[in-house]
Structure formats: C-alpha cells, structure tokens
Amino acid sequence: MLQKLTQWSRLKSPWILHLNTGACNACDIEVVAALTPRFDVERFGILLEGTPRHADVIICTGPATRQMKDRLIRVYEQTPDPKFVMAVGACAMSGCVYRGAYNIIGGIDQLIPVDVYVPGCPIRPDALIEGVVKLLDKIKKGTK
Amino acid sequence: MSFEIPIGPQHPALKEPVGVRVTVDGEIIREADLRLGYNHRGVEKLAEQKTWIQNIYLMERICGICSHSHATCYVQGVEKLMEIEPPKRGLYIRILVSELERVHSHLLWLGVAGHEAGFDSFFMYVWRDREIVMDILETISGNRVHYAINTIGGVRRDLNELQIKHILESLEVLRQRSAYYQKLGTTEPSFVARLAGVGYLSKEDAIALCAVGPTLRASGVPMDVRKDDPYAVYDEVPFEVCTADTCDVLGRTVVRIKELMQSYNIIEYLLKNLPAGPIAVRPPRKAKPNEVVSRYEAPRGENIHYIKSNGSDKPERLKVRAPTLANYAATIKMLKNGFIADVPLIFAAIDPCICCAERSVAIVDARSQKETVVTMSSLGQLSLKNTNYKARKREAEWPL
Image (spheres, each protein chain N blue to C red):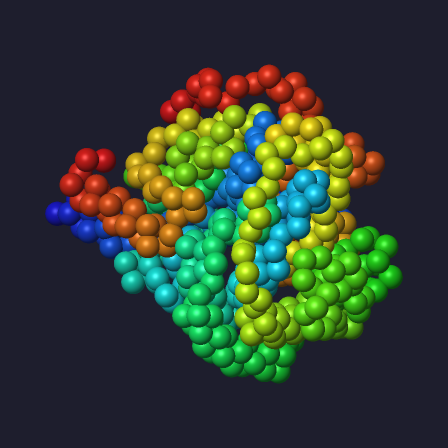
C-alpha cells in the first residue's frame, strides 16, 4: 500500500534539477523554455528545483568538462534515492562538436549512470517533454 | 567579523556554472571574487583542427543564446581573409537574423531579470512572447536556437514573400507587447524599487573597467559597434544608440527595452528594403596567410574574433573575446558594497554568458595579478599538461 502511494507520488511530481556541466547554453534556454507558458511542463507536476537535495531527476546539459567532473559526481551523490538522470542534448550524450577537445571528458554517462537520453543539438522543448514522459513510463514499468 | 560565502557553481540563481566567492560583513559585500572555468571546453584549440566551413558550426556552439553573433563575427573575418564580398541580399538576411537574435536575447534577459527580482509573472509573460521570435527564427532558418544560416560568402537560406508577411505581422504583436513591458518595467512601483540603485556603476568606472554593451550604455556612454564601426549593411540602416544615465540595474533594463524597439524598426526596414539577387557567393577552399580582427555588436556587447590563416584550409589561430569577459571586472565593482541578496540580480544584469567567456585561459593573467590561488590558473596548468590527453580514452572511474 505504502509502496503504491510512493510510486504514485513519484509519477505525479518528478521534481527536476537542472545542471549545466559545460553546455553552450542552448539546451539550457530550451529547458527553461519548456517551463514557460507555451510548453508548460508544470502541468505534469514537473517543477524546477534549486538544490539537488529536493530533486528526483537530474537534467544534465552539456559535455562533462574536467572542471565540472567532481561537482557533477557530488551533485549526483547529494540527490536522494531513487534518482534518475536525463542526458539532454547531443553534448550530454556523446560530446557533440566538442568531442576531442582537451578539457572534455565526453558524455555524462562517462561519469554517472544515465536513464534517458534526449537527442538534439539543441533539444526542442517538445523533445524534453517526451523524454520526461518516457522516463515516467520507465519508472511505472519498474525497470528502474 | 566577516564571513566568506561561496555561491555556485551549482546554484539556483545561476543557470550556468560559475563560482562567486563573496566576503561579507553582515549583509554587506566587502569583497567579491569570481571562480571560473567550469564551462571551459577548449573551443579555440579545437578550431585549429577544423576547416573554415566546419568552424562555422563550432563557433555557433560557443554559445546558444548568441550563436549567430559568434558565427557572424567569425564569418565576417574569414570573408575578409578570403577577399570575397557577400551579395547585398545575403548581408540583409544575415543582419535580419542578428537583429531577431537581439530581440530574443533581450526578451530572455527581461524575463530573467523579472525572475531574479521576484516578479515571476513578468518572467512568464515575457517568455511567452519570446516564443513568437523563436517561431520567426524557425521559419527563416529551420532551427530554434542554432540557426546555421551563415556560410562563408553569404547565407544559406533565402526569404520568400510569405515569410516576410509573417514576420511583419508578428512584429506588430511584439511591438505592442514590448510597449506594455516598457510601461510595466519602468512604472510598476515594486519592480522599480527593487531595481533602482542596485549595482551602481559610474560612468568613469564603466569606461575604466572596459565594460561593453548595455552595461556600458546604461552608464551613459553611447558606444555601439554598429554605429562606431559599421559592419555589413549597418551604415545604411537608420537606428539610434540607446543609453540611460541611472547607472544601475533599472538603467540596464531601460536600455534593453529601448533597444528592442530599435531592433523592431531595423527589422522592418530590412524587410521593406530587401534587395533582389543572389544570397551567397562561392568561397575558395583556402585562405592566404594573413590575420584579421572582426568586430560585432552582440546582444551583450562587443564581440571580437581574431583569426590568423597560414594558407591552408584551417585557421592557424582563432581567438575570441566575448562581451561577458569584458564585463567581469565591472561586475566585481558592482557587487562591492552591495547587499548579499542583490548578488543574483547584479550578476544577471550584465546578462552573463559563461559559456561565451570560457574558452580561453587568458583570464588567468587578469585575475592572478590580484589573487594568489585562482581556480582558473590551475586549470591553465592542467590544460597545458594535458594537451596530449585523448578525450575518447574511457578512463573515468565509476563513482558508485
């Protein structure tokens, strides 16, 4: 019973933390655009949170830079379980155009486990919403 | 008794990773220090490995908000190196997109300023109307953010009558909305009370600290590359340089709203006087050995690209000086003797674009004169040490 209740609340209010690990800002403004009236993800209970301790889902934009490496891992560890990670944009998936640069480690999945990848350079807000819906499906089915 | 408070790199007030270390005495900031480098990707080094055409796409991805600024600045420089002249219609479309970008960037900033001032409905209003500009940009270029409209020797997509009609219609809506924001942003008592007097930067300081863009213009200095050193077709387009003399965040808001109005006029002029003809010329594959400095007025201020060619199909050196970098020194000045609660507002007021500013380690020199321990300097050493580091090598350790 309690498990069902937590599952239900988890599905209805995935709070997100937006973390820029070295992105070019394009994905970031699209993530913010997804929160504003045209796309309005708040109707799915998605709320942007300021601190990792309140968040369920970490939305990572950008390739992991060497300087952000430790911070990224720390933010991941600060997030309470169960936690989910979305790699948003081509950079977070693989490094995109920055691949091969000396200060880039690569995609986010080189450092922390990723649940959902959202492709695009940059992503459209619609794609982000679809990504979140897919993540919710995944939680529902209990594959995670 | 003074405390040191670290803010960032991950902080709710900052959309991008940057660290500010402020020393406070009670509520008042005595010392501020920026910690940078979280967004350093090494774009300048990467640019040396890519061809002239490939670099356009890399330059766009320096920054998502001012992507057209960097691409145009770069393309203008390369056109000078290759000694080619883009056709008039191409230049008109290029400038049209750059003005649309200015509109979207200023609207974005207005929203963020509203958000930081605690006026969230203003934020939502502005961002809703920003979608109109995004739609226009999407009809012109096919993309919402990285437009990829520039190519060496012109632009990649032409405009048709239907698109022009659509843009002019949308422009009317934007004009009305902006007039409303102007009224709201400058007369709404609580909003004005929050912004007025915050982040004071006198005219002398603004000049001495080399501030650029709306930050400089809000301190009463009418400086704009579009007027001072007209590139592309700005010498034939009528517009005014907007200034304010309040020298605070309110002034920066007013300047940006005024610039929005100017941009609408420029866009209308460009569309009504669009010349016929081709949109691009075919560029050569290589550029002769030479060097060039290209200037461009980005939404945040003056953007400079220095490009050196060595006769091959790749640049030998590409140096970018983004406007945010020029505004850092002024930000420190603005933060000092302010309240700690004003940090996000002051920081947002320069419209920081961390990703723009962080490709170079040049800031090490500027900062290390004052500071002995700077995060950026260790980064500089790291990057030198690791020039032969291969990013594809999967050596990252699993943290769990």
